[in-house]
Image 1 (tube, rainbow, N blue to C red):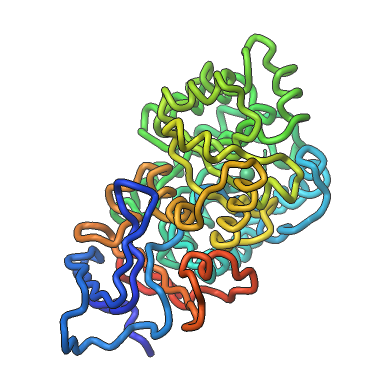
Image 2 (spheres, rainbow, N blue to C red):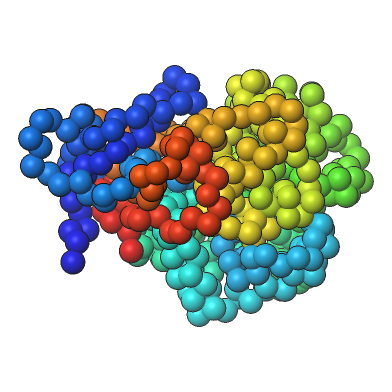
Length: 411
Ligand code: GUN
Ligand code: ZN
């Protein structure tokens, strides 16, 4: 049985750079890890180094950061009932209502965490269901499996069947209890995220309460923004006093530097300017955007304006837990928009870029002294040509060889 907490790893390393969406390649690196799970040294392996290559043939890079994924959609991944509002009504709300039962949530949480680990995702920003017990079960499983993550009770008090709704005051009370129990757990490995699903499923009172809670406790806020044309129109009808979609979140205290917005496909110039000015982040979910026919997100525009962008699988509108596949879809979208983005930059968005979007890049996303040793090992055949092409575009790729959080191997 392999040591679950090796204090050294050796292999070919891709280390994200802090000053550009690029990587440094170290063909044969030695990574030394402290008992607390932090890198103490990342150096070229010295001549005659006695440490054997840890995962021969693999490349070591920071664990993938999935900045947008729905836990209670694990079992309906790939349901072709879109576009968005039809898919929610036909497939998603019925499945999410099953999470009223804790034992069901526990079973799905095991599958969900297993799927993240298999694809080398070591950190995720997760939408729970609207049931407090199910969200607690998710946290417990993340904890047990050693994953890093943000998770939140998905807040909904209107616009969906009664089984997935919860009156705002109760829901916010349940959030407070979950914050007390889980936020900051294990040295910050687990955090609570305030998660109003989207404007159409929340009353003004609930959104305002959610904004206050996030402010009081310093919590991440995650929600959906400008994903689908019909959704945007309905949002405009529901909030006629707001000039555009982003204004709904601004007005309710939900847009700031600790906010991450999923999708952001159809934003106006003015909305991009305000997102950048408020230093809010975006989760780019191209596989989901293809599957629901939502549209082509302008990644280059976001990056050029200095908006932090992570990648999100958005399971179950996304059809895969693999951020490598998501990065490949992001490449396709960028080409279709006549604004190509390099595979190297996309891999950076899947790692350090995601950590930045979630506000944890002081500890996560780099292979450098002082950072937590969150690492993934990915097999790359010897005959592969360009390393980034090989990592991203082999859609038939298998699972990651290994994944570690704070130097501890995830199983
Ligand atoms: N908008 C509101 N809820 C959802 C969801 O569950 N998935 C996606 N893709 N968009 C949403
Ligand atoms: Zn989503």
